[in-house]
Image (cartoon, rainbow, N blue to C red; front, side, top):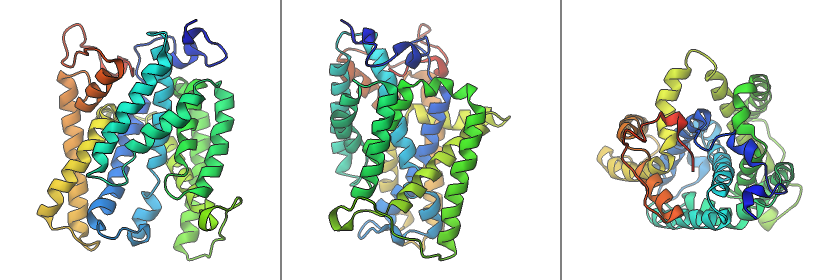
Length: 358
């Protein structure tokens, strides 16, 4: 029996939205946006404080607005992409989980190579945790996966610093895909607005208390190695990430939508390529700018803005002639273990928003 017929695993009609050839623009915009924020933190980690990095060394504005505020977006979107890919793979093969395992293994290898130049990068974690966490989750319905996601998020956030929330965030993204949330974004403006208000208030309250020097309590309800991890900063980071997502989705319902999509969607469609090339760019350019201290604000801002402009422009230009980014094409080819056309032809010259994620 094909996996697409296993109704106790997922509802493929809900995930695919009735079509296997439709991309969801909002997801690409969110990916592109997340890449921009991640770059800011990576430059501080890998360039400014490369020798002895501590989050507390970052400027307060970077800590409150960027640090671990964009990683949750990236992780949830990876889980969403996993769910969408799973549904579409099940429509193409009798063994979609084998294809998914190969896809995750390829990502892990890419990440391992990237790790040699960028210690602390996330692709290895996504590949490994995808195999350990997401593949088993593929046997669960959306609501069950959502409950598991909340439990993993609650536990992991208090046990392991940095990577602890990732299993829960990946599972949350998968659960949202199973429940059809990506396809329903356009019809959920009211809920998105409420989410923006709630998460924005929570994030703003935490920032206000931190800026005014209020001594916040240490919260860890389960203990752990060395006393565990304080839950409040992690919760604040996730609330900020959700507020960013909701705010951006609301902007996509305004006249600014066309401009926002034009800038961020191409970057998001080439998220893997851009994530990898960000490392190459800041490692190559930063020595030329003489960045070696947090006081080099002008050079740091210049480096960040330059990389983002280059990637926004080149992503747009590349996708005019090619169907996928270079890394995305290689990832797809190794996933399916078959030849995949890269250059656009008249046959394949469809708008980016109508191209499949699989």
